[in-house]
Length: 249
Image 1: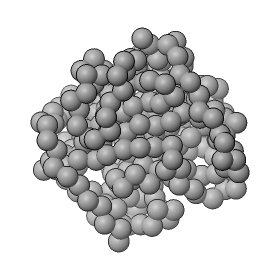
Image 2: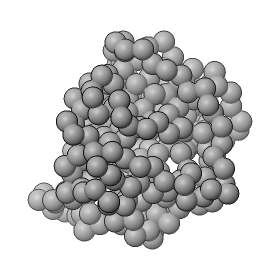
Image 3: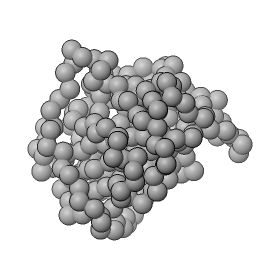
């Protein structure tokens, strides 16, 4: 078992009580997140007292992509995002009655509790299962960030993600900084350059959480968008099912 340590959250955490499914008839609106420019980027400490978070908009994790029905005592989640330079910044509040992290970083990492962020830098879609056409970062509480490489093997991309998780009662506050790379990223190179973000840029994007309380395999997979492909668990294969993120000033 791999131990994970948490620190007490120093600021109140608001539970997500509006756990209402998005309206599938408003497909483009419900699956598009508008991210504001941070101005001053946040300090990655798990505390949402940075000025940028005050203007960021919450979105809920309320789409049950996989698994049995669950109640708010088992799981509820929401997130917000801002951008600056070559990074996206995320703040998540996850209420979970149990958090599991028992596997080695590159073994069944999707079956542990983790945040999963799907990013397609140029929103071009397409198959990314064994390429960097898009990334599907599985981010563990200890900040191991895993995706599958072109060699068809999982790798840690920990240099892409910086984060901190704080805990209060059964709630977990995740603050993450994710560096954005183009589809030309190569695992064989050490000089990959990230992409400089700008207002008006559109990225392929979905946010999700893998929830597992006591089982050997993942119990629920809960996401932010209602695209059909995600309900078929195609997100790790096909970026066409991602939602969108639009950057604004």
